[in-house]
Length: 113
Image 1 (cartoon, rainbow, N blue to C red):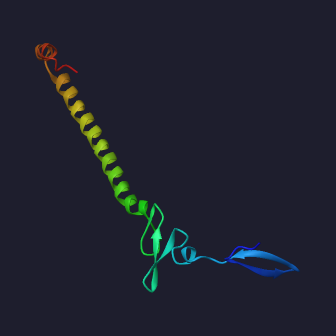
Image 2: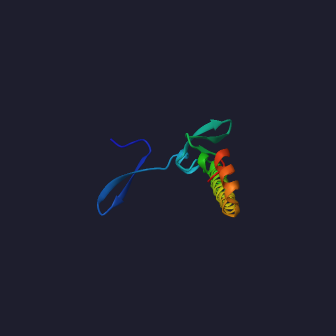
Image 3: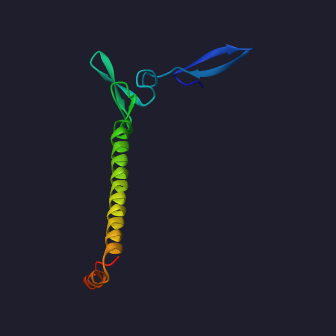
């Protein structure tokens, strides 16, 4: 009737079935199972966990690199947009200063903004 890892504990005249923590719960922090290796046991981690005691998540190692990569891409896009706007502003200023003949030449060459 009771599970092999269960212990009956008294409480107000009643008994509850309480499961004892397994090696995987204690040693592997619930993220793996214990595997016998000679005289000791080692943790075999579930998918997504790593380390001696299955404490580290696989994504943890990627999070810093991913964050820095995304920030670098965003800064690159912002810099490119700023550079484009500055060059366009400079070109418009050149056209405003140009004489009528130069404007006509620029229109024919396709450089008119």
